[in-house]
Length: 113
Length: 117
Image (cartoon, rainbow over all chains, first blue to last red; front, side, top):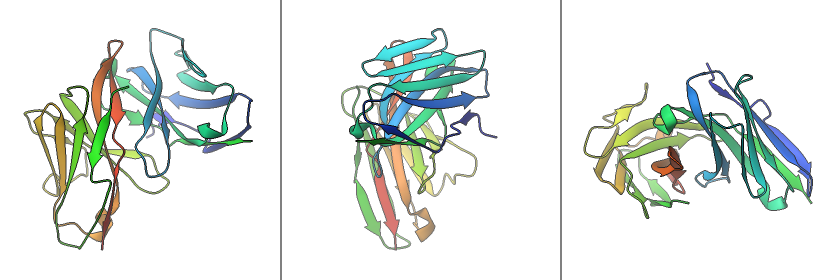
């Protein structure tokens, strides 16, 4: 039973446009959500996070939105750049991050120049 | 952000040998570190949670006698794959928790590619 779902395995976006990556979760105990970016044969790189007390967190070109009632979060990247091409993982944790992360299966983003 | 290193980055070994992978938090102390493995085109699978000074907690299906974890200090955890077999070939990644704005946030190492011949 997947507690964190990324239903789009891949996404292609033109350079300069907005990339929107989606993530759904089922466990209402999750209170901390993170996005990681991963290149092949490398460890994930932490991008941005959001706690359940917020509905938006912004860091430069990256913004994460959380809709608790829908158990849905999204990562917006604007403007998208070719260097953003990678696999993006959504992850969730309970107890203020003190429980192991539960990862989605990832979405491969391709930003086309 | 916090920096986590892993060593070696890749290793090739013969079947039946043991391989040790080190995970270090470079600029922070981590009471908890995690070990994952990733198969091609799949998500990360948590193997175990490593707590400094105590025994690791293994996920269901992970053999604790095969994957030995030692967390001897606040900056170092090691994973030893004992009597490695070809099916153990995988990408192993560690992470360490640091506090970010009041929340435990995991930072990942660069990973170790293990190939067992």
